[in-house]
Image (cartoon, rainbow, N blue to C red; front, side, top):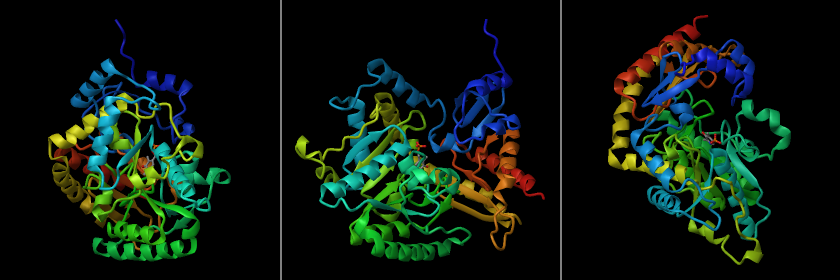
Length: 452
Ligand SMILES: *Cc1c(COP(=O)(O)O)cnc(C)c1O
């Protein structure tokens, strides 16, 4: 008979050997991490018998719940057939089918799929492809990238360089290439009817940057509609439309990082749809496998593809790879995830879930320490501020979001904040009742966190 060990048992073994991501490990002296024994649907269960609603989809990856029966079955079946084969010189059914499906469901003109095994590597691939495309076309002088303020594209050096969140980036500054950073069309604190105006202002700034730098620029890289790691800041879809026009006018690529916002998070299957645009590169990961396995994809056009297609000796080929590129189990999980989108009206159902979420958190807008309540589809955020009138933030050192986090855990909800921002990005299998509970717990936590 095996004795079932409790949280503290696993915690102490963990702290002896594991170095956790995005964590000051000393925090765990006062803030115990939660060892999870199992997950089912929206629920995560720890070893002490507590359970938590995963309101942040385990860092935005989970779409259809933990231990989803149909994704489980698809992976099992694939496992019995082929777990993995190198994708250079070889291929397999799952990667071919997935590529066909992705070409089919993404905006028209994205006809080629290149694979990586995490979001950051998808960004590296898109950056290198864009640069290499221009070089192959006789423009090696195009070496710069334009990004938006407050953007986030991952943690590897190239991806980190084109991000703009100081907390993650500043320390490594000396190691990185320098992008040209343009103010994001951020609609923070604005009523919805003024978002379009913020977008127009943002486009005017982008035009200026392109006028000055287009000739040595490879691409503009953005997160369509929501800058997720950048505190869930949001902007109007008209920015996407205008940016596509500007990129065409100045002959630079547009890279859409849909790693977080893809697969229905913003209300449409892909956020780019809301601006009615096709980017030159679209990066996908996170929800791609329903939150099961690491996989990323970069979609691009046949025009880009053709610029690399030549005799080997020209060295125009894209000689980039990752060991697990196109992993069969991950591709099968992705196919099973896409099946779930087809089998029921997921986006339609999300619309009513999003409405419930919006209504449930709307009263927080009147809270004296809340500066903004914002929402785009299934992503919503509440920003706590020291001064509501001026939007002065609480000093980050006070870590008020952590109070909300800890309170929520005692009430059976996993809400991992971004600084002073409490956000909601639940799996699509959450119920309206569960949404109400999550919103109530968040409101309690915000009350506690802003008391003094
Ligand atoms: C998470 C994320 C990435 C990086 O993906 P990883 O798999 O964590 O490397 C890149 N861009 C955006 C918008 C993300 O949210």
